[in-house]
Length: 301
Image (cartoon, rainbow, N blue to C red):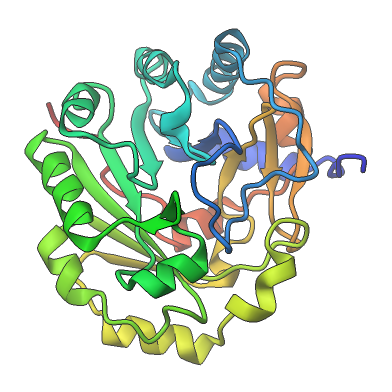
């Protein structure tokens, strides 16, 4: 299937030039040691990874050249599962050399106390995806390692290690049909994240569309979850908030967007300039700000 490209969007470039703060999500790989049912990052259309250190470094350099004029910039390393990548540390160090604040989002399965201590000088934030604490729910969601879910005690241990290492903790939760009645607040208060992002399940055709009827929830059900789990540092994002509000890079180095309920890609950043790639996707800085994308993310060391 051919990649889907956007028509040029010059207004997007003009707004980028005026930005004072920007965040980007670099999905390094589609490879993962879990099989999460609601995952949108299989990159089934864009399935040719360019996962070498040299290619990733070139992508990072192109990103930097495109946003270097923005004084406050953050790069989030995601996947798939980014901790599977052997040169993750090298990429993060390069991003820091380029002046980015850095963050990591992981399923937590490969975290150890020693690894987190090593990450302390590389990342300002470490985020863990935690959708449920119920073993049966986790199994049904595919959030297991060798068919075994990560227990709540282990998640709490990871969170404590992150805080003790002096790194800010974030938790991501995707609210769906299987967990929308769960009360996670007692666990969240013990984990004590500085930011709890609570997403409504978003259907992406070609990625999770085949299972959407089993997972999608109404706005009312989503709001009910929020009301039952109020937390001081909660950052809710409904399905519409997520569309066109993220600057995302795919494993093959292409920018991509989800504005039409499917993933559409630019040409890869190792082939074209940042400006050319940005012209081929849709991104709304207004929606980025509205969903809470701008905040104090730099860790004072």
